[in-house]
Length: 233
Ligand SMILES: [Zn+2]
Image (cartoon, rainbow, N blue to C red; front, side):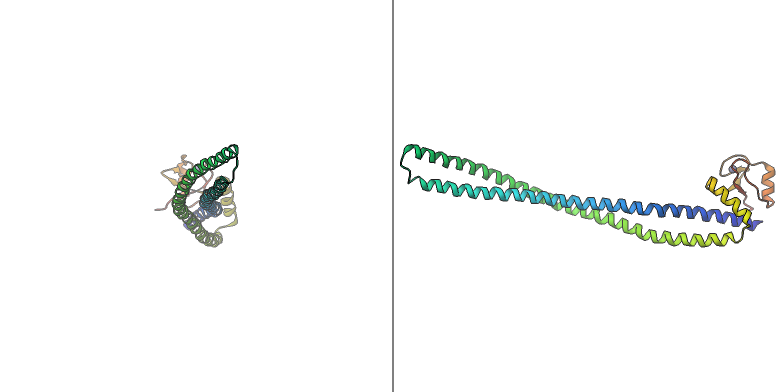
C-alpha cells in the first residue's frame, strides 16, 4: 500500500503543479497585453511631445512670416510719404506707419518668447525621448521574457500531462474516480495527517482512522473527505 499512497501523493503534487502552470498560461497573455499597452503609451508620450515641438516651431515661423509682411508694408508706406499731397493724407500715412511699427515690435517680442518656448520644448523632448524610450524597451523586454516563459510553461504542462498519465496507470479506476471527485469538489484530493490532525482542514482525525491509514488502508478525513495520508517515516 506504500506504493498506492506514494502514487496518490505524487498525483496530487503533479495536479497542483499543473494547476499553477495552467493559471500562469492563462495569465501570461493578459500580462503581455498590459505590458505592450504601457509600451505604446510610452511611444505616444514621445509622439505627443514631438507634436508640441512642431506646433511651437510652426507658431514661431508664422510670426516670422507676419513680421516680414509688416516690415514690407511699412517700407511701402514710408515710400509713399514723398508722394502725398495733403496734410490729411500725410497724417493718415503716418498713422499706418506707426500702426505697423507697433505691430512689428509686438511681433518681435512674441518671436523671442516663441524661440524660448521652442528651446524649452526641444530640451524637454530630449529628456522625454530618453526616459520613455528606456521605459518602452524595458516593458517590451519584460513582454519578451514572458513569451519565453510561456514556452517553458507549455513544455512543463506537457511534461505534467505525461507524468499524470503514467501515475494513473498505477491506480485502479475507482480510486482515480474518488480522487477526481474530491479534487473537483475541494481543489485538492489528499491531505496529510500531522499529529492526528488533518493538515488540509485542521480537524481532528479519530485515532482508529489514523491507525488504519498507518496500516495502509485507504480512508478519508471525516471532516473534509480528502484521502488521508501519513508519513511512514
Ligand atoms: Zn480534513
